[in-house]
Image (cartoon, rainbow, N blue to C red; front, side, top):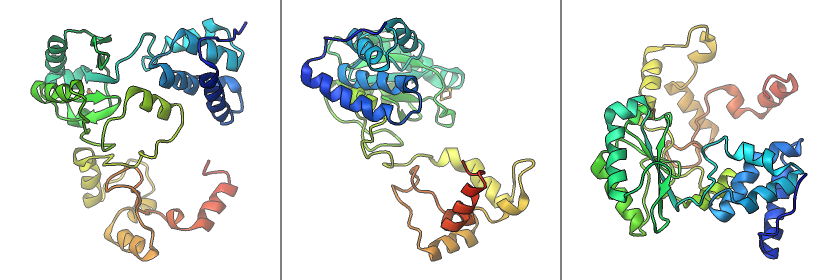
Length: 280
Ligand code: FES
């Protein structure tokens, strides 16, 4: 049986309920909103607090045990107050052999904390994290899920010193600066902070294979050769320029997507495809 939380003050509760309604409106089944709701309460309290559990249970008419079971399953949900910045050092296989373990040990010694522990001033929570799909930049450190590539113990320590001093830090790729844990949690709850297209998404190392494939005319086995013959070449670039389709976002950002197929520049083609139900 769901319970009503009394932990949040009236105005906070009212604000959270309003946000929760916006989240619930995105899903046909209310229960599907649980994950973003957990991020929402995390953006309020800095972790999934007992009050946050009660709030989610109340909004979704679930038991607190059901909500807790989900919150304890995923490592991005914190069950005790998190630092302003989660410093996650990848110690998965490739990063580990490239120095990730050494970086983690160096930071642990420097900060006097271990995995999933937080500095006394509440600034940093240190974590060992699994592969971030950034192995081409190993060893990788993430701060609130922003990438810091090709790290060394010295570079990681320098960044951590800035965080401790209250100075802004900028990731290697992605946003222009690292947001706080609460700010990022709100984005993960589905509330756009307008920064998704800042900076470069895919760096040079990630695109080397793609460039080689294009230069050599390589395609994935079974791929339609005709469909790919026009992809990404100089002619397509020229057509894109003629079409007046301006790239948006920073160079290399997730928003900078150059037209590659007719459907990228023709509304009719997209509509036809939708009608056939093949472009869901
Ligand atoms: S092993 Fe560290 S990013 Fe893949």
